Length: 338
Ligand code: KG4
Ligand code: ZN
Image (cartoon, rainbow, N blue to C red; front, side, top):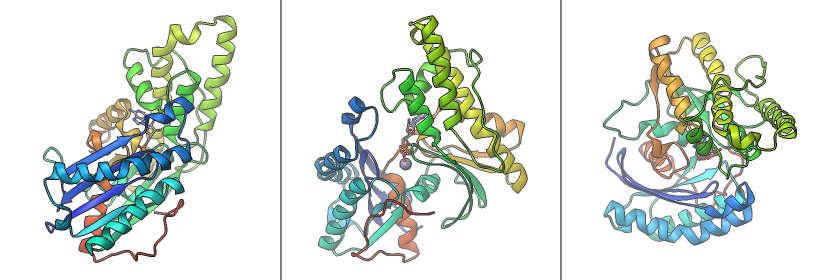
C-alpha cells in the first residue's frame, strides 16, 4: 500500500469525525459526539446538522494537529457521501468539497456501510485483516445485514433486517427500561451484572438469512406493561437481569443466521462490524465459535466499531490506489446501496 496521507470526514448521523491516514496506518481519529440528542431519546436531524456545522472545523483541525501534519501535505479528501441523514451528510460533503478544491487535491466519496466493513483493513499490530471471501455481520443503529465480501469493492448482501436494526432494538428496548439514548452501550454494561436466563422473549421465525427485531421489542413492551401493573418497581428491581436477558436474545437472533450463512456458503472467515459490534456479548459469542465451529474471526478494534472517520479514510486510501475519484458536483445521498 502506498504511503499517501488522506483526510477522512464522517458526518452521516450524530458523530462529527475526522481522521488522517498514512497508507493503512491511522495517525489521528477525532470525534465529537452530540449529547443534545439524549434529552429527546433519539437523534433529531435538524439538531444533528447544526451540531455538525459547529463541530466540523475544530474536529478537522484537531485531526491535523494530532497527526502532526499540515493540511497541504494531504493527497486527497475522503468523505461519507451516504447513507445517512441528509442534513448531516450535507455538512461533511460541503466541507470535504471546499477543502479538496482549496488544496487542489482529489475528492473521494465513501459508502458508510462499506467503510464499517473495510475498517478491518486498518493496520493493527494485534490482528490480521480478513481473507476474501468473508462474511461480515454489519450491525449498527440503522442497518443489520449479513454481507458476503468477495473483494474490497465486491460485496453482496445475503440477508438483512425486514424491520428494525439490531442497534435500534437495543436503543428502543432500553428506552422502555427508561435508559438514555443510545441505550445499546448501557444495556451492555448493566447486562454484565445480570442473569441472562431470567426472562425469555419471543424470537422471530424468518426464512433464509433475514432478520426481524420488531417482535422482540413488542414482546418486551407487553411483558413490562404486565409486570408494572403488579409491581411498579419491577424495572428498577430487575434492570440488570432484564438487560442481560434482552442482550442474550438479540445476540442469539444475530448469531443463528450468521452461523447458518457460514455453513451454507462454506465460509469460515467471519467478521462483525458497526456500532453493535462493540457489544461484549456479541464479541464473546464470536470468540466461542472460533473453537466450536473453527471460524477465523475478525472483531474490530473498539474505536472502529461506532461511527468514525478512520474507516472513511481507509476506504478513501483503497480508492485512491484504484484512481477512483469523485466529481465536485456529487451530492450527498441519504440512500446509497453497497
Ligand atoms: O455504527 P453506529 O455508530 O451508527 C450507525 O451507523 O447507526 O451504531 C450505533 C448503534 C446504536 O444503536 C448503539 O446503541 C449501538 O450501535 N451500540 C451498541 C453498543 N455500542 C453501540 N449496542 C449494543 N452494545 C454496545 N456496546
Ligand atoms: Zn455507522
